[in-house]
Length: 454
Image (cartoon, rainbow, N blue to C red):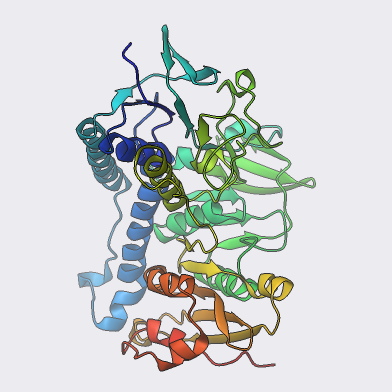
């Protein structure tokens, strides 16, 4: 085998970003991926999830909101959703994206090996009957959904299974309270399934601004999503008719036609050969790196969900590109800053957040002030849906520097990006007050949020 400069294990967002950028910079790169190119994001995560969210948005508009704007169907008939057609359209779109990634790798001179690889030692990788050597090895194998060790757990499925469903389940239960649980619940509910969320604690979305999370939970329940609090699932049982019942503290919940585990993800490091290299990991199996993606073993790097950094596609992409530019470009100090990472939960409505929550700010800063508003967006003044938007702005210090922005409501997923850039640049509340608004829009409300009432 000809000498190469870098070996990449994993063809998801991070691995692809590194390989493409390194290849374009002249490095000889080999990327190993035994599954579908694009990883979780393209095939079982961000992209198909957003397609489901868009379908849900259309369903809400047609079934709940269109009449308020004067749209009616003859005879009172309701639009019908064809799960099979949507699935076919989705898969065709995903294949186009995968094809684009494969073509980009080829154009960058990257060799794609469609087999599973593992470490054999520092700078050494084995794949099938082949053995590869390079001064740089990048671990980007991502994460996989967790299935708890309880009786009958295999009767349920994970988010991966959602994208394999041939037909839409009528009655659904989802165990979990994080991103994936809420996004699955909202998409399925919007498309017509009866959805129950089984939450082991008394809150959703740990780590997000409490006021926004409470507001979102209220909206979900008003829409018809049933939330059963403080209900850990101890086992799953299948009935004679094939339906499922979730058992918790001897109480049964169901029956359900489908059950989803959305209780977290773990790094895909099992069988990777870390023990043969001495690469350090934590108790959960994550590869430990510094802010430059370097492990404790020279020449071995890691990025994306296999590390402890935020499990978000843009983080993995940014890390991969930065690492390639530092190793093979002329930006020798290049690394990513994770101080302000914006994120969106694509629930209905979406929740968008960047920076510190009020609780986090009070633990770290002095003179914290909170500005807050809940209002009915203009769109819903005619839709007939009383779905209010909630916004929370957190500032610190006498200059009232903006430390966090948290929003729940229509369009907040798109509103957040520009404000995230501004907050990273260090804006203050006075900067917001002096800015000229776009009217009428929900975004303009961020500029003039009033102080929270005592």
